[in-house]
Length: 257
Ligand code: 13P
Image (cartoon, rainbow, N blue to C red; front, side, top):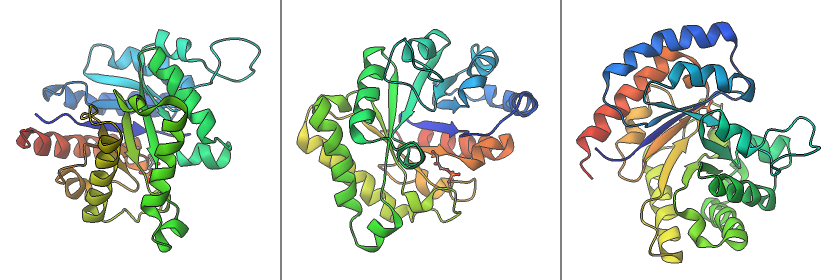
């Protein structure tokens, strides 16, 4: 089966009650022979509770953020060693909501990626253009800048064992998903760009995120260079999320790449 990754980014949503209903429903999922292709990234406070629910399954744990310090006087933060200790395997970085609301810049994002990799966890680096960029035909320019900013700090080998999530900002939470064919071209562009920088890197997974739901998931997943999905609101509903997983499983199973 082609390697793929479906990630649930719960953002600032969830409750103890919601989690117990969610995993009651997700038990159906254990009948699929998936290989740790599903990641749940809840708010930090629920990580351990969810770990207990998934530790004997193929679902793995993701965090939505991490600090750049390992320990010390940094009130309110969570370190990479803490995340690792409680079973986190993936960490989302550079999400446009953190770039916007928490003023995270490329330098900070690069530091986070460095630490995540140092602790042998996998970063999910989010990139993508604004509505304005799209209007000005500047999507590729924005993506190149976002990638180059990371390469400038960490070198191109940073892209070994990393997941990239292409999330056009205008598609996030708007119900206006990107067009799957255009998205395919952008994914191909991202992979080629990284390859021309460093030809030894051939295994970067590039996910799409932005208003993914059970109705449009198939159109994305059927594209050759879309290796998974980063799902926001549809991942809060276990029925919808499970449908997306089932669609992905069936399509990727048939893609014998
Ligand atoms: P939505 O699926 O709600 O558009 O969110 C996408 C996203 O930002 C995932 O990280």
